[in-house]
Image (spheres, rainbow, N blue to C red):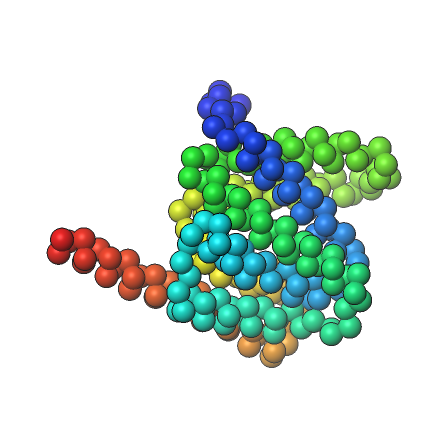
Length: 240
């Protein structure tokens, strides 16, 4: 629509193809996980992905986490577990599905961070969408059952907000180390609580509020630590 042909150009086609394939398979596994497990259980398992992605970033991208970030990540993760309130009765096959989904998210996050050094967020999202369309299109004849007309607008909204999320995710990882970006992602649960209250009038329990407080605290701590670090680095550069 804008006539910008540059988003189709990539210096790392193979990496984009790998990212698009793994990203699409991860989405399919996540949807299957939500259909298999209670929401609280799968949400708790999926939020292991930041821990996996931070570890992978340290090994493959050479990103340093430091003890402060590690502690902040742990605080945020604890808050998520409290809010998700897993049942403790997860079947083995459901656990494997959830762990596969969490691992897929973590690998894709590291790939996006790696690609972001040379690729724009629009380019990464374009190839992800293109590959996802091809893979799910090939699966369509085997799974398509039609849909209710009332769901059309919901599907369109999911597409719009999903595209927004993909672009934002890719853009954020271009500028932020994974150890910083991932704890911010925990605020997903805070939005879930707010929207649940506004739309369905679900009042969060005290334990959910406690978990939300831990998430907020972890993000404030992260901002504070990074502010202090950036300030110290700036002062060191000025002195030099």
